[in-house]
Structure formats: structure tokens, C-alpha cells
Amino acid sequence: MSMNVKKGDAVKIIAGADKGKTGQVLAVDTKAQRVVLQGSDLKTVKCFVKPRSAQEKGGIIEREASVDVSNVMIVCPSCHAATRVAHSISVGEDGKKVKSRICKKCGGSLDVTVAKAAKAAKKATKKTATKAKKTTQVEEN
Image (cartoon, rainbow, N blue to C red; front, side, top):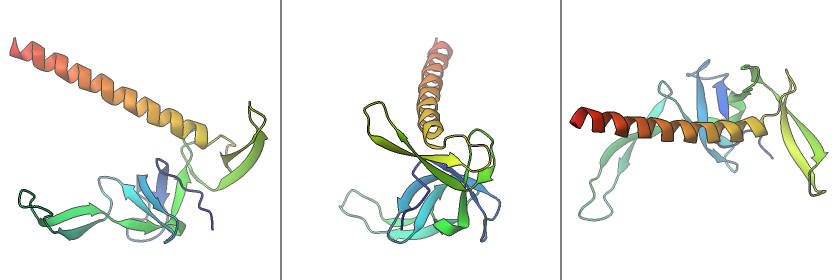
């Protein structure tokens, strides 16, 4: 069974303990039909980690809990609403068929905006990192 959710998508939880909260997809498990979400106020699980070498520390860590894929809906980047997913098949530049995901409410593409959002996020982190370096250099002088 194919899933409409991909890594990097913004999703809204529609059922369960975290109902109404939003997060970003970190990992997708197609076999178990589950997704791992990243969010500051989402449910976490405590796990015991065994040290692999003498230098590593073991202990209890917290990591993101997985959610069943049926309990999440994709949030459209253009209309900012939780929506169902439609698929369209078009012919690409090289003559091959290209399958894309489309928002059922506004008709906007879900695939292109996710790639653009990822690029924008990378650029934003680079800009903030350079600004932080400049401010620390100014403060030192």
C-alpha cells in the first residue's frame, strides 16, 4: 500500500493524544505504516541506550514517538490547511511521465513547495549561522 506522506512534509495530527498539533515528518516506515514526527510539544518515548564502546555513555534518552499514518493529514503549504492528497500524472521535460501530489482544497502542488521549503530552510540556517559568527566576532572585539 502506498502512502501519501513523505519525509519533510508538514502534517497535522487528527486523532490520538496529540490531536490538533502539527509537526514535520522525520521518517516514514512503509512496512509498519507509521511516521515519526518532529515537534516541540509532541509525544516522546524514553528508551534505554546501551554503550557500544568504553568511551560512549549509556542511559535513558528521549526520542520522538511514531504515529500511525492514518492519524495524520498533510498541511498544504499554499493554503495552510490540513487536506487530502490527489495525484496527477503529467509529461515532464524529458518526455517521461511525472506523478505529483496535489492539494484537494486549493489545487496547489505539494511536491514542489516541499523542495522549495527545504532549500529555504537551509538558506535560512546558513544566514543565521553567519550572522551569529559576525555578532560573536563583534562582541569579542
